[in-house]
Image (cartoon, rainbow, N blue to C red; front, side, top):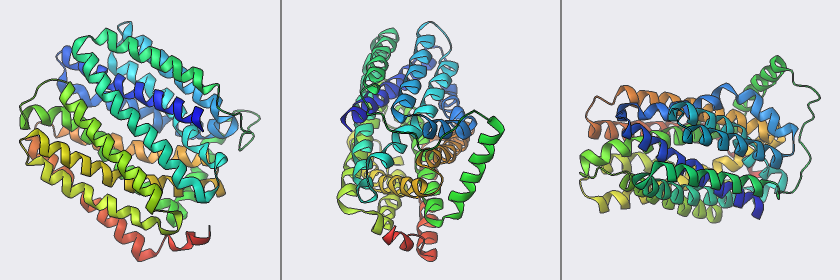
Length: 388
């Protein structure tokens, strides 16, 4: 578990430092209006490759899959350093991340029993969010001084993460794939998606985490546009530091979830989800840095409390049906479609007043969370999982 946490921490650290460096490159080239394209390029591989990466995660030892993912991320960073465009280079990093993601969460179902999954997810999520915190801070500080130094630092971090991947215990694959039949993989992926969507608990997990991460990716880009106008601060470091505060909140929320939420009472997670939208609406009206930081801390706490239990429940349901790797690949597809739609929508709305856009975003998020919470209560979708 320590090797997994270490590799995931460093990989996520590099991912987020690289994102800030890529955004700085876009701003330096006079294309700040195209920043959203970086995120769009990153999520496209998650959508296109979803049928294959889940099968790959279940067909090979997951530690080796993590190594492959980190190697591809390292290659994308090299291309950016050599002068390739940040959008195309970050798209290649997205390919590595798409391969990496089903394995990093799917391996937990093989390491831990069902009653320990929420706690294990809390540790992994906490490690990831701590890495996001340090990654955005590191990226903001280095990119304001030298984009080249920022990219070189990311290269070194990815290389160390890849080396640590070799220390992860070798666990037998969940499914045997003797040959790669691409049409067959798409068919299996479709069947797995249908299986999960027919499971009410899995369906709520897919929809809930997709809404959360889609909105999270959009909010991250919004901060870089909103902070200069609302707070009058134009550097890269301040939005990065605010993203770090958000990450601290998610770590706290994940810790609360590990102590207070289990698979038998997972609907408590919606208490966290329901506070996110109103906090964003209040934040949109702020003009001082400190209230914004405190609101982002609260927002992160709600997010951590919401997403960690749903991840654990989906892993359990997936492990019992289609395989944890495939379940996580389906989850990645749903989440990244949500990211693509919401980030693209934000790109189309960039000409609107940014404060109104942020406030409207908060209202939309609250409506979505409220609908999911009401539907899960009405259908009693989690009650059947008490004995699972």
